Picture 1: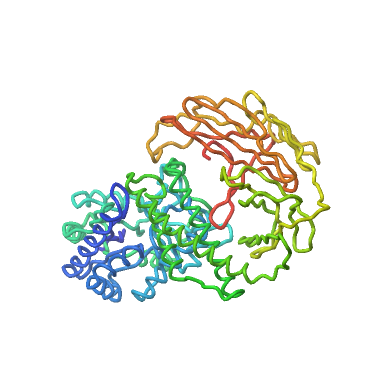
Picture 2 (picture 1 turned 90 degrees about the vertical axis):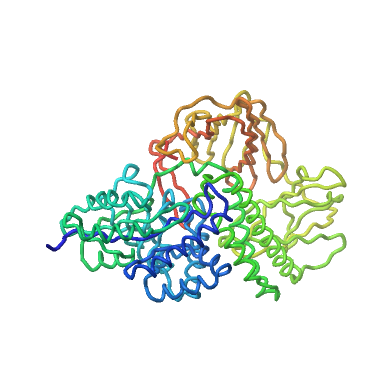
Length: 612
């Protein structure tokens, strides 16, 4: 009797290089798992092994070259199947867009150069959510398919586990949500197969069923494979094919079946991960931005001034950053020593980027023809962004001399303000001015002596109010909250009540916040200690709000500029509360509220409904 339902049995090993262990243990775990998979291939001619993450292969190549050659042969044979195409299986929301592009660039390039293949299927089975621009990024990295598991069906309803996933630009991949687990213990395989078969609604339908010991590696066992062979002979079981995700997706496309379409983000699972362990998230963004700046300006320096572009150093630094984006590192769910390791590797990447960035700006600035003048100090300001604009510039400097002013290339005087230096001795100060900069370029300014210097009026600012041509802001002196933000051109009052309110919310969940969708049980609010003006001049004024709750403190510095149409807020939190989380509340005075959020190389619009 011919069996109608088909299960594509995907032999894999979920490898967490870091989680409840450090990367050194993960290193050994990768080698042991790969050795096991190779041994299974010798024992079973029909066995296929599915594996991702170029970082693991680089470990094996450098530490066990003979085993790497075995893998190369099995890849050539077609039984060792490369999926993922990325350096690691990262968190799929927190990193920036360039990081996902680099995941694909370094991953696919490595697989092509070392193994002669590129991945056709994206693969992030344990990541906690998936940003809405991934279909575009996957397609441009050469991948037409995607496999994930979270959010599960209890967290996001889908019309089917296999569907077409699209991003805002129209890019589409064929996606599959693993219905139960990406790994199984040997004795649980029959039950797992029966559950997967129960998901097939079409009498002649098919689905993928993932098996193999995972998390700490392991992969498919002898008992796994022999059980599949035995179960396949049973008449009451579906047809079981030892196979790969690529084969499954190819069969789906050849079948001509119409798939449901899902657009945008795949949420929510473990939303607590996006606030846990803020340090690793801060280090990640700092390293991403600095490497991007360093590379841009190194390229410019090479073309403009004959400087160096240290490609190998930047590549190694990016690999460190990409590795630390692994979902259990970036999510704050690993053990504390893992974050000591992450600090070290982020530090190495940041140092490389800092040195490359400094070399680039030095090489360019030294070749700029700036007219000499007695007692003149030249300043070159770079804009690494792909857009022009006005930007605040702060720089440390010796104290200004009498009648010393700031001028641009045409000799026009620019408003300049001195603020508190980071140093407390030896006559140092900190200079602030607004620079109007071209995209991916620079402008030169000069500190010069002018006897007939122009004076500029200070920003209108008192102890608890400030205004410029666009708006006026006021603070309640007792609470420290914003009491008014008034738009001058049309009389709009932005807030319906006190704003920028630091609210303490109960959070008794675990690190992941499993099963928690909305955090809304308010325990209390920070109360104001002081509201005072700490800086005021022709460039900006700064109002500092100090607030306390329990044993914690918050310092909020609100900067209002004469020439910029936004307010910059620098917030420092000294947090000591337990089982609690912190939110800032802004009650908007709008009839219809919709928020736009930056996502990797894109924008998402979401309703502010408590899930944020």
